[in-house]
Image: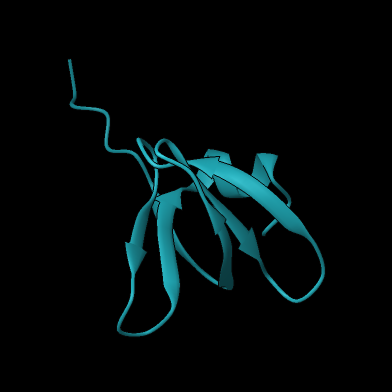
Length: 61
């Protein structure tokens, strides 16, 4: 059995909200809540690294 490697993507956006468990991201078109358990916020360049499936589900890509 091969190891499943999850594809990660970087989404550029602004953090417009935050709770203990989620970030609200505005990508210039829409705002969506994403779970912190799935997303890494890169403060230095303002991007959010997340699984590709989540970025597609939230229509960031």
